[in-house]
Image (cartoon, rainbow, N blue to C red; front, side, top):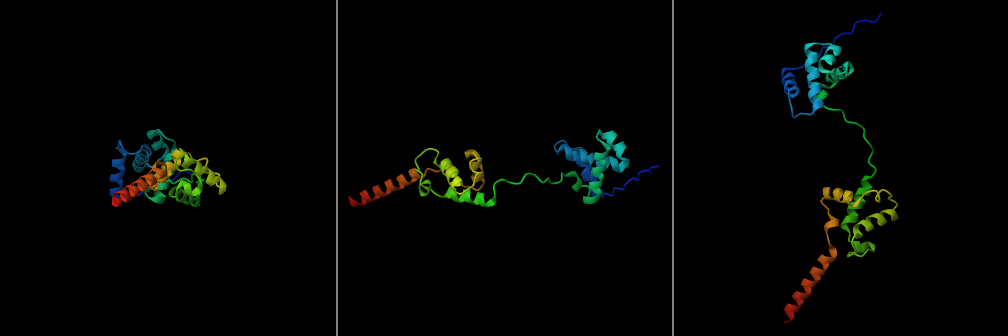
Amino acid sequence: MAAWRRAVELAMSDEEIATLTTLSRSRIELASRVSRAQMLLAYRENPSFCAVGQRLGVHHQTVQRCVERALADGPLAALDDRPRPGKEPTITPEAKAWLVSLACDKAKDHGYPCGRRGSWRAMRANTGRRRGMRVWPIWSRERCARFLGREEIKPHKVRYYLENRDAEFEQKMAEGKSKS
């Protein structure tokens, strides 16, 4: 015959109880945090996983996991989700550094006409293929712009050929004025 389950005593300080009470009544906090705060407070009143689960409309194992996390990590740490492993990044840090360095170069340095529309995109894709980086054609122009925007580099908005022509024009005008 199976033995009765023993109730696990969940010790909390007055500050933690006050914080949990505030969180359990919150309307702007994440629903998962509110639900877990309610579970911990209800378990403190009635130490039964099944009773708390029925009262809150969740499975008793959900309550049990929440209480066990509160025992292991502390009541306030049990409110947050644990970090998940997630997918490994497909773009390596070396490739990101290469993209930043490529964005800082002029298109003419790589043999592309700087006045051609889309030269940045072609330069990025073709130079990446030559270097054996097959991931760059996957990245769209917008994704590259977003990444470089976080790095505060915006090559897709810079028009080098206009800047060069303006500088040359101003220099010629300055020379012309000094001769006369």
